[in-house]
Image (tube, rainbow, N blue to C red; front, top):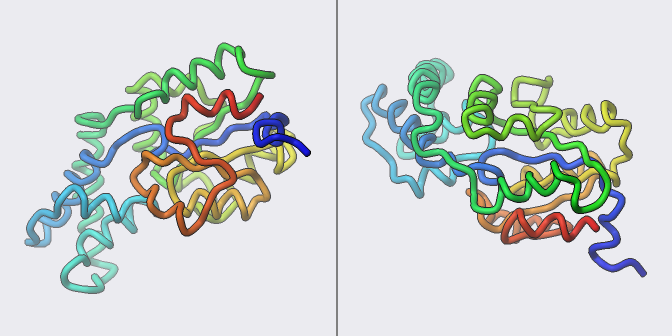
Length: 230
């Protein structure tokens, strides 16, 4: 019987979620949500409350943010608030956003190929590319990734597997040669829907969801991942 480490030894494609996995963007997102709320005459929400809305893309984040007390918002209200959100967020992407401890060091290990064979690294996020790319560029992370995909890169977003399956086709990898690393149930479900391995991180924005949807591997730091793949 293979050990836990050995069963992951043939993985050659690593696909990372962004918010809550590579970066802590919660404070900048909360600021933009509260600007959207202010456009509708609503008071600010706490950082902790906004954190519970993150993970399903910008539109859903805004919908939850402006519907928190009053119930369902109309499509017109959501679109209006989303415009304020996008305008503010685009100008404040990196005010407080930063990588989690160990992220850059783990990516350096994969780039240096000191743990196992060469692996293709990708980002698959439900964040729009108009925000994703500037953040990765601004933090110096973009060069690590061969593919960078957002919610607007495919006809459907996570947990639909279309993005992950596209990466598998482009890399000619079998599903069990790929691992999706994320902090939420959405990421685990995406991996399951594509037949890939699911890895969760315990430090992220939505990590409490992983108890109800356990991944194949759970990490307290991304620095633990290289050793699990050898």
